[in-house]
Amino acid sequence: MTEFAPRVNESNPDPRIACAVLLDTSGSMFGNPIEELNKGFELFCQEIKDDELAAKRAEVAVITFGGEARLAVPFTEGRDLKPQPLTAGGTTPLGQALNLALDELERQKGAYRAAGLEYYRPWLFVLTDGRPTDPEIFAVAADRLRKAEDKRHVSVFGIGIGEGADLSHLEELSAQRKPLRLAGLSFREFFSWLSASLGSASASTAFGGSDSAVATAEAAEQIPLPPAGWATA
Image (cartoon, rainbow, N blue to C red; front, side, top):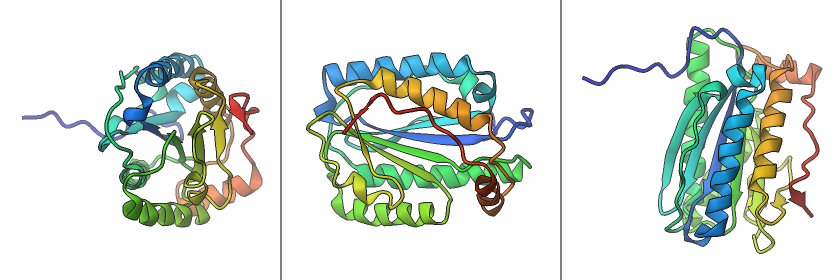
């Protein structure tokens, strides 16, 4: 019989910030791009442990989309996060990945509420170098994501990988934040920034026991993020 594993660590009473990171692992990422992506995520796993608050308040999930959308790393406290070797291959089912991420975020918030834990507004990052190969699913998922962001249920960050990335589809993900472009293959710089950003968020008081309470808390305190030195215009 499989041992039951709770979705959250209820022995940790701290508020949580759920961060879903969607990574393009399609065939176009083969070679140096996927190698640099792995190095960046490994650095992230190291750095988030060094931040006392983020280590226990940030919970990170990784969803890959290369041929299929897959939950590569389920939501894990920063202090327990371990590098997950990623390989490249297949198409770019971004729509499937978005739906999976939204479902996982809602389940995670539900687990927080069931455990009596407060939480921050979740973050959702999308890193891709290509266009979605499931356009019909993507259109519906992007609309779903925009509506969730409009209700302040999630904050969305779209990031194009490299100079050749087409940002037009990433612009469909958010009406509140324009996508940025990763400078070259600066994944390590990006993940270092993400770790620092989660640290800033974890030190704030912009949390609550429900989505409406979180929105009220955010109105009183905006979370400052460090400059995105990994981005290019």
